[in-house]
Length: 380
Image (cartoon, rainbow, N blue to C red; front, side, top):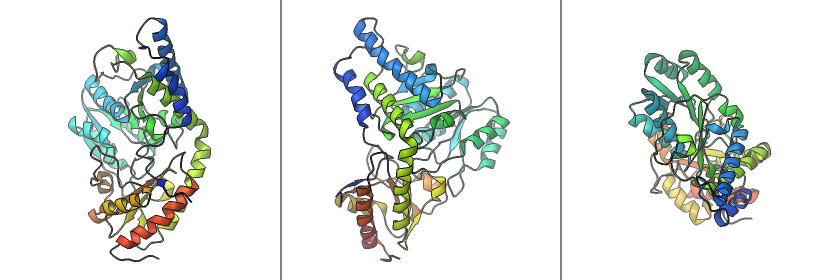
């Protein structure tokens, strides 16, 4: 049995071997600036454009709409700030969005949509906001929540928005979706979509914003006019190549990997919720295979995570922040969870790299830790 279990793949999955192999030539040999005109530059540009074509094909998009960024946060900010700057007006997003969407929406004077206690958007609240505010320019709906794994009914929500306001740009943060959902189906419902490479086996610092032709977008980084005038700066060719390679493998193996990981998740949830004070945060049927989110009543997440790390289990309570310190989950708060429930959150997230040995080690360690720290000390 493994003596370590990495169960924080929603924060960052390991680099896929295929991505590393694709990147190496651009880190060692093809070092030209893709904006140049000589042979070495052209080789770098070829790798960049081939990667753009690959990403577009996997997402059902036009290559011209693929904008390479430094990651999901930049892609999200470019969507919100870029559309708002180009069109005027204010954006809307769900209360459970990642801060990369929520913060620029709030900073732009936008509106936040309530969610139900299961994490799904409040349809009526969204409809009322769109209808009652003539200055709405963008609606952002997260495809898969990064903490709970809840999948939004994106097609239904997008249809409702378009029926009420056909002129509004619809964006989705699909950063957590790429590993689990067919991106062609996701992108079919929206005008813009954000992705981040390190969530599905690409390198950190790689991402894309995909925009449909005709979507107004003002650049937020000015300079040399790269990425068709939408994101200036010399492109990180190796990162783009690694992103595309990882996305291609993810797309090819999604159904097989998803089924295997779903079984792991079901086992984790079934065994761990045998404890009297441990409950699943959401119904397993509404989430993706890779995220098992639990609430430990009477136990504080921070203490549990420290104890788990000491025994080789790497997990999380909420999304990652720059300091590494735990922050109260705005996602659980928006879902109506109490402070006590939010304080005892535990997110176990898996990916293509997860193994039966890791799951077995987690199931050996977590119940002991929770029992030792529980205020009730009770297990079923």
